[in-house]
Image (tube, rainbow, N blue to C red; front, side, top):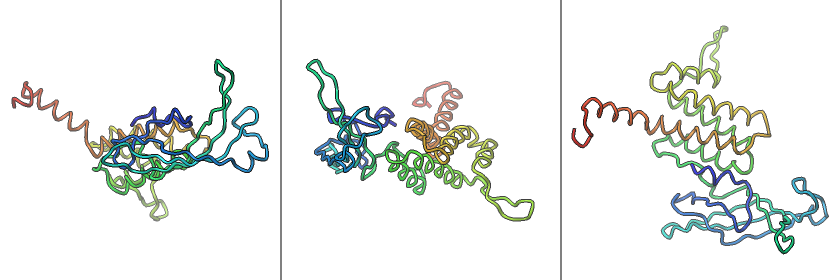
Length: 251
């Protein structure tokens, strides 16, 4: 995950982030066109909450194109803009600040392994589409991803209560079950950390995008450990080298 790219929540035209193409992943998205439209409130002189003093503001549309010649995917961005006065050696100049809200196709914050089940990949992709527009919903969707990972790992999801009824086991309790799982116990703490972030998104509208990026960073590791088995593969390699006391090429 290129965290520094998604840390940027606003930009000026000369500082458009290095977003990777969501289709080929290899190319960068280059801005071909930005169209601005001042909104009704701005025209009426209503002050903007995020700016000290009056600023023209409204909505923008941006067309981006992948610079990979074998791809050339088109991506469209919608968002909010306002004009900012910036001091220079020759006095103040007006620059436009752009705040993206929606991308189509949506950007890929993580490169998800093809070994990850399709239903989980689809949910992660939906969470990507919410990243810029609704942090709380994004965090909550990542929490739903955890439920699906639990299901995929066949972690028990139902039990019988004292009244003899079948009831769902809470996500927190399912994660605690993982601690006793020989194969997946090591990553239960990672999943628990993501759950706390997801919970905050479910109950608090003030969750920030840095928290979401923390969740994605941890989720990336979880997917690697479960579906790519990176640590397990490396441990086997280490054990084999140490047992034979020579490089793998000589075994």
